[in-house]
Image (cartoon, rainbow, N blue to C red; front, side):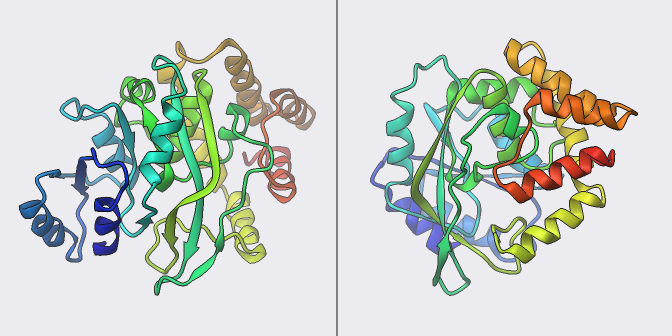
Length: 289
C-alpha cells in the first residue's frame, strides 16, 4: 500500500482527494492509513459496512458527503501510473456532462516484487450492455467516471446484491445509455499474488478453471443477483437495452432448450473470446446460466 499511496501523490493531475473505507482489514492497513491521514489533509478515513468489498466501494460512491467532478476507484495494492487520473479526466471532458461516462484502461500485470508479467488483453468486441450482462471488461482499478454515472449508482443504492462494484458500474453505464472508453494504454500496475480478491490471470488453465466454476453455478448466481439489481434501474434503461434484457432473462428461465438458445441469440449477449462464448452457450443450453 505505501507504493500505491505514493503513486497517488505523484499524479500529474494534482487536485485529488482520497476517501478510504476500511472494511475490517486484519493487517496493518488501518494503522497505515491513519499515519498518512495525520500528515495528508486530503485523506479522509471511514469505517466500511463490513459486507464485502463490493458493498464497501458502493458505500463510498453513494455517500452524499463526497462531492467531486469525477470519481475513481482505488484498490489497495496497485500502483498508479502518473497520468492515470489525467488520461481519464481528459476523456471525460469530451463527453457532455449529462451523459453517463466511464473511462477504463488496460493494466500492466506485475508480480509481488514488481516485475512485469505482461499486459491485460484488449477486448476484441468493445463495450456494450450485451457484453456487460455476462462479463466485465472494465477493471475497477483503472476506472474514472463522471457525476452522471455516480447519480445512477446512487439511484440504485449501495445495497444492490452485486458480485463486484466495477462490473456493476460497467452494467449501469452501458445499460442506461452511457458511453465507455477503453484506453489501450495501461494506467495501473496491477499486482498479482495469492492475496488478490480477484486476479487477472488470463492463462488457459485459469480460463478453464473459470469455465468449471461457471458450470457449477457461479455464473448463474452472479446473473441472478445482477438481474435483481437491475430492477432498480428499469426506468433508466434504454428501450433497446430493455429488449436485450428481456431476451436474456428468457434465455435463463425458459424450460425449453430451443427457447433458451433462441432467446440467447436474439439477445446478442456475448463474451469477448471464442472460449468464453462457448462456455456461455453451453451453460445456457444446460440451464445453468
